[in-house]
Image (cartoon, rainbow, N blue to C red; front, side, top):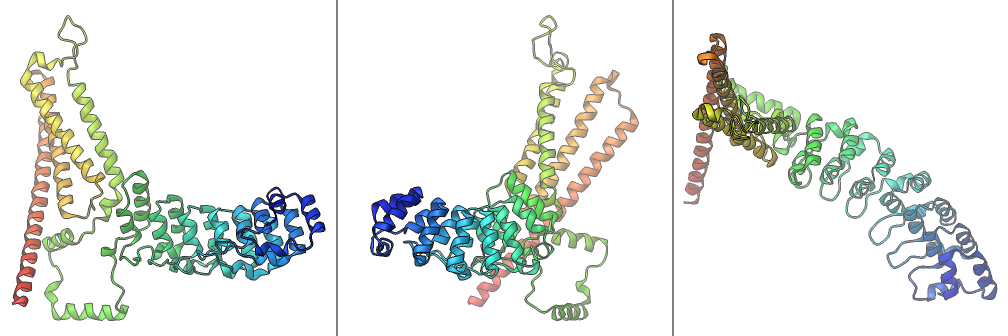
Length: 455
C-alpha cells in the first residue's frame, strides 16, 4: 500500500485521498497486490472516518469484500468499534448477506459487536438480518453463550429477544451447557437472576450438561466465596436441583407409572408403614436441600456465637478489675473469689466457641450438607453448644444468687431442655450408626459378589 494512502487512512484525511486519486487512478486497484493485511477501508472503518469510507466505497466498492489475515471484513472491524454510520454504509454496499460473513474463529460482525457490547451496532445488524443472530457457531455456541463468556449483560438482554422463551431454554454449547450453566460457571449473579426470570429456563434449570452436571453441580466446582454463596442461594430459591436429585427421564412417563404400580402390587411390603418406618425412610432419603438453602444463615449464626463467646471470655461475669487498689488490672473478679468457678466457666465458654468454629469450618468447606456424616457432625455440635449454654447459664445464676439459689421452675425448664437435646443427640447417633452399618454391609456384599463372579 502506498505510504501516503496508509497515513491518510489512519488520519481520515479526505483531501490527501482525493489528491492521491487524482494523481493515480489505479492506486486503489493495487491495494490487493501489496503485502499489507488491512486495506485503506479496513483502517478507516476501524478509526471511524465516515467521509473517508464513503469515498473509498464510491471509488472501489469491492474493497468492502476484502479479507484481512484473520478473514475479517471492514464490517467486522467497524462493528467491533461501534461505528454505526460506517456499518450502515458498508451494509448498503455489501448487502444484508454480509451480516453472515464469518472470520477464522467463526464469528460474524454481530458476534464482535456483542463481545464489545456495541448496542447500537447490534440493533442495526439484527434489524438487517435477524436470522443470522440465531445461527450457531462451529463450536456449538450461540451468540448468547458468547455474551455470557465476555460478561456482556446488556448485549445478552438485547439479543435474547431473537428467541422465544422455550428456545432460550434449549440453547446449549458443544459441551451441553445451557445459558444457565454458562452464567453459573462464570459466576455472573446478575445474568443468573435475569435468566431465572424466564419461566422456561427456570422450569428446565435442573437439566444436566454433557458432563452430567446441573447448574447447581457446576457451582460446587467453583472456588467458594460470597459470590458463590449468593448464586447458590438464588438457584435453590428457584428449586434448581443437583443431578443425583433429578428424576431420570429416559423412560416414558406412562411406562414409569406402570412399572411403579407393578412393583407395589408384587411387593406390597415395600411401602414403609408406621411412624418409625416413615422416620427411617426420611432419614435415608432426605436430600438436605432445606439445609443447603439455610447455609448462609447458619454461617451468620455461627459467627455470632463465636463472637459472643470471644466477647464473654474478655468480659466474664462479675467483670474485671479496673482499679489497681482492688486487684490486678484486667484480671477477672472471679479469680480472686473462687478460682475453680472461673476455670469452669472458661472451659465451658471455650467448648462453645470451638464447637461453633467447627460448624463454621464445615459450612465454609463446601462439603455438600446432604452428606450423612456432615449432618451428624452439625447436629451433634449444635446440640452440644445448646447443652453447654444452658449449663453455663445455670452456673452463672447460681454464682450470682445468695447461697447459690436457683428458682425451681428455672431449674426444671433448663434440665428439660438438656434432656431433650440429649435425646435428639442419641436419636441422630443411632440413625447414623445404622446407616453406616448398612452402607458398610452393602459395600462388602457387593465386593463379595464381584469376587464370586470373577471366580
